[in-house]
Image 1 (cartoon, one colour):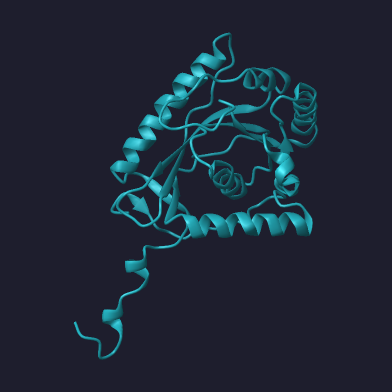
Image 2 (cartoon, one colour):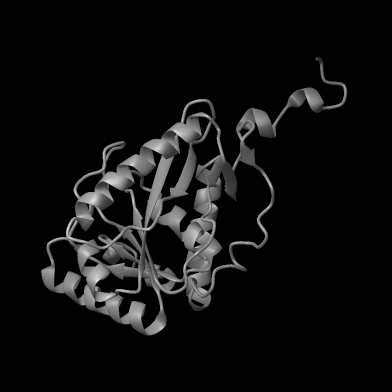
Length: 244
């Protein structure tokens, strides 16, 4: 990236800031898998960290346009020190995600989803857990934000002290060998009759702003140092005696 992006090292490593996100040995192994995958697949992951994190539980109301959304949010909540839950539709394919906050949210299983909703409320109230919520419910192509599901309204009502924070994830690929990701946060959502409509509108506006800022290389910091382009990592002209 060019000017406008801070390349300063993070104050603490992801592992140091995880705040219990990785549970036990299995959690650390799963977390390591996630970090290696992100490092391998992305050139950089950038973010505009929030100026401050509120006390108590947070609901990160996220866009859902990329396969890596959950992996990137793992890095976010780890860095922020917000131990979080994450509903996963295909949880049964890799149940070890439970050791990094994953919970089953199976498609077509109303009873299973209701059980996860109850457990989520219990953990948010009892342990102060936060929640990564892909509120549209379906992974789909950018840039449109689809209708927000009623789960957001349910959690907002059941956990009244939770702060609802719009979270945009924008992917960019073109001038580098690997994609780059940009993550930004909006002002907390106000509860009300029009919560779902306002959440969709504010999330769309935030995503549009994030996309434009990414194109302008404006105001982001490095969240994850990935893998540079091959021409950035290898230059045979640097070999002693090589023809230049």
